[in-house]
Length: 634
Image (cartoon, rainbow, N blue to C red):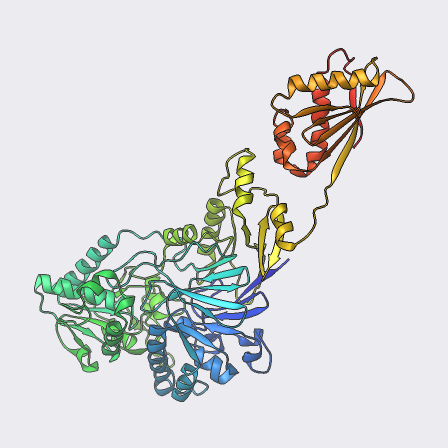
């Protein structure tokens, strides 16, 4: 039986370093190629030695697909293609292709220029890597080669994020990347066809969470920011440059306008200008409201939000600062956090998920004394006095959203990645209980093998369908299989089920008729001729409306069924009836009179046996016989 194999090289029972290897129909596809925010050593990138110990990856992979521009999904791309070695096609959407190199270069600057790491990709490697990228349009089927095709669907989450449907022959896999099933202020909700893949590989970041109403969350966020500003405090909101940043900027911009507030709002790094440029460029990827109002007012041109300068962090008085990156693991957000951490008037609002090992994760778990990187030996720990708030503005699907996507796509199997093992285990149980499908959650380096039952599409002729309907029986149920009888013809690589008459005509063949015979014994003291005449009279009375003939040669014919009578050699009172019929539809109406007809519908191959039994049942009603009747041969 054909199999699909899925092996996470990253994001197996973990969040970060997404990299999934899929083997389907003899093709090897890599889904995402991310880095882990929680590590600074070899564990930062996926372990490509799983694919090959030496040599380039090009020989082992048919293509690589990147779902979106977040670094935990694309951060290892230049390392893989330029340092390990991969020259094959890399697919991503147009917005991802535009934004990905900017974030990769920003990440490189922090790691190499500021931290001084040496074994890392260069700016030139990023450029060379991006030359291998083939952009994808939504809902466009792309032929990677003669057998492998891919199709992208809108995933929400961030600008340009896509789910991808991978198909080889009749086998298919859907990979969600990160997605959001609820629309927000700047993006729409994820959507996919009812494509019924063999496996749906879904993220499960919020596997056990059902988020409260978005409006309540927004109200709480604005209330907390306003209260902190009112008491003269500073508010730090760590974000990634694109995505939640724009969402929260639109929210604060509208609130500041409405409340006429004067405290400054800043956005760190020059990425915001570039980000807004790309939102304008790819306006079709945003939600309906922004697209409609774009001509009158661009929602991404902010009146109250200004560019941040490093020196502003020391300014007195209240302010709100959006700083990158979002998990406080490096960069400007971490620098500002260090400066403001000692003042209880200040506040940090974490608007999204934080990977284990990051400062964001530590403070959300209540750690108030932090050992910072670069601290002198036995030097003082960073004392965290500012208020720490967590408000999920994360653009990941929650448990409800994941279930909603399963209903939408109707997969045969489910596989969870990009989540924590305990939470995955809980969701796995829920999925198996509600949808009665197998759900898998492999760890990194562990392979899940799913056996597939490829369906072969067959066209059915209209005449055959009409004939089957005319036979009666239960009406077809679209959710239940129904047995059809006909001749299967293969023409020009497509299959067609037609009636035998049509098949003979199309193929130019002669018909050979098959006849079935059986012997039925009954006890009757009369002569053979009398017995046959009595059978003829009996059949005329019970099979009204059918052509029944008594021929001079000593046979009775009912439609195409022939009946002959002879006496047994051992006992003249035992009559042997020879029954002969052709296997054709004309006998079906006769059977309908029998209590055995449901057995024919349930198991048509047994029709021959059932017809024999029907004659036994009919002849048992034969008058004056001693009712001993049975089949001796068929």
